[in-house]
Image (tube, rainbow, N blue to C red; front, side, top):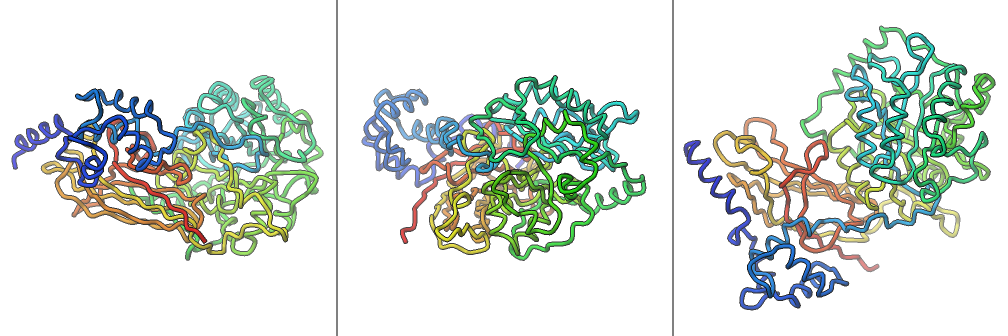
Length: 586
């Protein structure tokens, strides 16, 4: 086929996309079941909403809104084309539009919190620019925890934000603070936590205290120098800024340039990643190595437990710290000790958490019922890649810290988790992570549980690529060969990915395939959806992705918008899918 013929064919298809002839057989059969003489009346549409879409409270008025929205041909109801248009429309999303609907009156420790790592970096961890732009972008997306590494500037008379012991270019702290103040509550009114990694002497700590106080004023939450006995609730902290760091230590000199060169060599080895990100690892058979080369300093002992630098700190700085952080002296048992009289934040690298989970899994869960656990990427992730967030979440970790510029499958999961609860950045942890049993027992993440729920997913078809991609994007001379991947990210027993057949030469692929996912812990499950274009000679091309929290999926036939690698929604690309959830009665 010539290029000219190819263009004519697909201009024709573009004009007549989503015609009745393209409707999957399953959709046509449902329409026949709920229509009469080719029309789905108002009453029958309401019955369809209740019986198929599982919208039990759907009213005649709801059905009328759908008919009005498609504005299609017939006053008395929907013909097949209008019905098809409704199913694929924005009025029919896959997640319930419930807004903030979780109980927001519990302590902060009862929530998963949307958390950034090195929030000021524009790219890799070694040589990229530091800027307030990624901080602003994160806040606009709903991120609620911003991390800043604070160091003396070159003249040692002011404070910069940069990734220490690297070649990253600095940005002034005051610029970051002002941007946080301006954008903190654009996406969510719930509190923003600023975690500070502090490398300052007392005179500059005092300067930071002055900057923070003047920038945030009454918005700053300052409970005083003493540790909190219990964390306040997100509801009580609406539109407040919270500072979290260790009680300060003396400024640490940066390592020599030789260390930077060594780190750069590690970066070359670690940066080989597929175009859309490596597959997300899980705990099954994962290699847990020593993590002695972390670029973070979070593994140092808590200054409150005997560090002499405590005596030299600026008192006005210490008063700003609402959430105290640090590791007590000793091993895991001390780190995870629960103090009935105070709460704190503990930070662990992803590898420290993986090792601790093997021997202290239940202790971690018990610790996170009252205290906050922050997990951060291992230091050798100099390419700003991320890790499997479920390992932290299944142990109750509230702050699973991610490089928000580290686009790939792990970050897609993070985006998916925080679509829940109205996208406010706080997701209430499941009850089983918050409660103790009759014998003071807690959830054991290492135990395989029986299947609780079965999710059945039908992938009918997809469309929109012709509008959002150039017609030679996938192949210069023929239409694309699309396939879809559908699966679950959750506890290890639930993790799985499945794949449809590849459909050759079709801009509007119609797979009509059904998949079944038994879920042992549906509360932590995310539905993963990807579309790729098969390429015989090179890597397959990326065609879109999304992750959806199973807990907020709408049953029924839904239009699922797909996103780019960066998580931005395409204008037109969607899949038509059906979700059916059934609980297993024991």
